[in-house]
Image 1 (cartoon, helix red, strand yellow):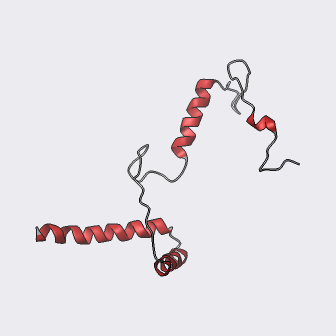
Image 2 (cartoon, one colour; image 1 turned 90 degrees about the horizontal axis):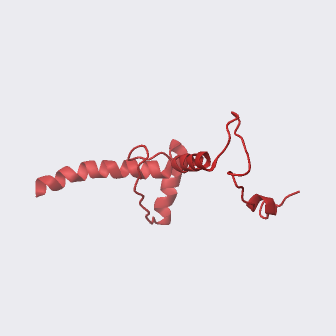
Image 3 (cartoon, one colour; image 1 turned 90 degrees about the vertical axis):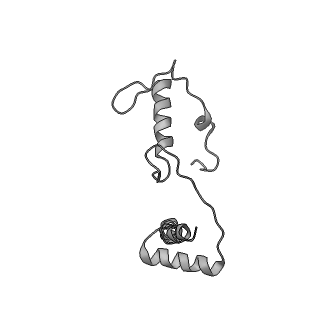
Length: 107
């Protein structure tokens, strides 16, 4: 039995795709070039979809909350079935939509 925290050395061995032959499930040979395309595709699909647009970076914002505010957010997320980030994003958009016109009129 293999310990998942200490996999066998063969897991770390490198493969020379130019000299060794490996094939995908469709029978196509896996080359360094096709492997690189697969790696790039995986990197593009990791995580949530971009909010900015396909293949584009979405800026992230980290913030601190008090325990009571976080507890309310967690509770709302559980009850609504939404992610906390979606709730905060929706609230921020509403705040910006309400505040920006007021500031434009005051200027």
